[in-house]
Amino acid sequence: MQLREVTMLAIVLRIVLSVLIGGLIGLERELKNRPAGLRTYMVVSLGACLIMLTNQYIYQAVGTGDPVRMGAQVVSGIGFLGAGTIMVTRRNQIKGLTTAAGLWTAAGVGLAIGVGFYEAAIIGGVAVYLIMTLMQIIDKNVQRKNKSLELYVELAKQMPLGDLLRELQAREIEIRDIQHELNSATEDGVRGYIVYLKQKKRQSHLELLDDLQSIPGVVFLEKL
Image 1 (cartoon, helix red, strand yellow):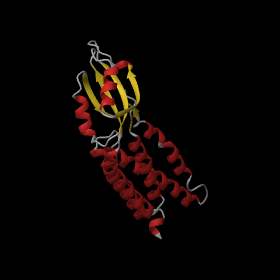
Image 2: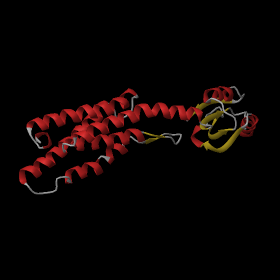
Image 3: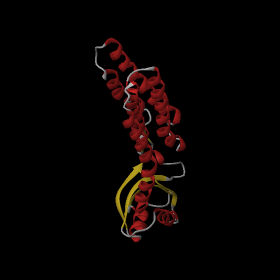
Image 4: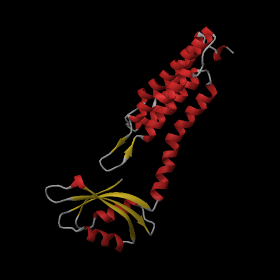
């Protein structure tokens, strides 16, 4: 079949398809203002497609060599780009894992298109987009119903940590762990803590945050 071989029609189709599917995956990241967005995903998918096209062309023109050698280098080499999107915040939160995984998958989609495996590329690209959009809604619903949560709390100088612990126990909240943020101290004595909690009774996280924010001595409260 001509579309499986390196012909002018196949080249145009594969390049256009790689840009479109790469853009589809990147669109979701772009709307969330992530480090790698629409253009990055398009370029990654297109680049992988071009490399695979070149590899197939060399194999087809010369008749010898490894038809997947260059593609294998893309799979291992894309890691440096994905690693650049992963960040650890000052509160030990890891950001960018989904973006990095999306870039790696976009490269895989480009490779599939580049070699002419259109079916897998289209189905895989749509599947990644659905995972990034629909599954996020499910994930948020699960998180809202989760009794365990992680908070960043800032306490005023005059409020001992023990007072906060007693306030939490009075609300039937189990304290799993507390970490003092050494760099959070300010000139007026405010101290920051990362607190791991588990509610014994079901309560929405928003209601819980409003309740804890009303405790005298709690300067700032944020869900991590």
